[in-house]
Image (cartoon, rainbow, N blue to C red; front, side, top):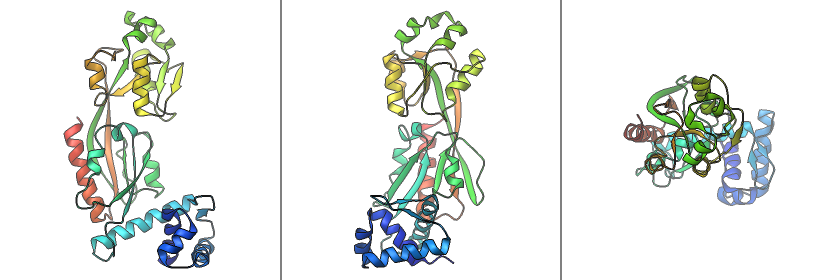
Length: 288
């Protein structure tokens, strides 16, 4: 059985950024906070905090902190929490959704002081944080529910293979030669981003040879407009660039549809249920 007094001490250190501030928040001495965390680590047989400045959670500490936040949410739903607005929600989402349609869904008028801790993962791999118990919900491209979790379809994000007119002219890509396309530099968001590889496999039967790694959704588009390379970009995010001609299709008529799903724990607090409904509403307005 977990002693929640010990978990609260760990959470306070993480949320306040140090032992002294945590002690002030809990109305304890700094030594008492330190002792509670040591006791927790002794019970578990492994550390929950990395004693850095500020302190950071270990992998186990992250899971425990996430668990405590879920307990707090359930208590708030039962009106057992003294401060139901002081809640933290951890979610994992893909960068393209964060940069386009999702932020509007995070505005929950019923919870004006709700705090979000968002981690960004490629839509193909984000579910692993959910499986590890580090987050309370996940937006990704997998429809496979985790144990104890549920999943709903949000819709489709459409991607197009785009580049600047100058880039296409420089590499003579208007000729339709797949050999020339193979030699053209490609933009990749991260090593988990396989959209460009899928595009090349479908149209040229190979993988990109020359790649630039750009871990910024907006920077990715700006680099394409500047002529650094070509890449797969969400149609939702580049409508203006397509309309003004600063980005054009490498293969006219080609698009790649990526399904998106919302994963949540079946033991869902009122906060998370409200968030899920808000995400679903926003997705239906923005996605295919």
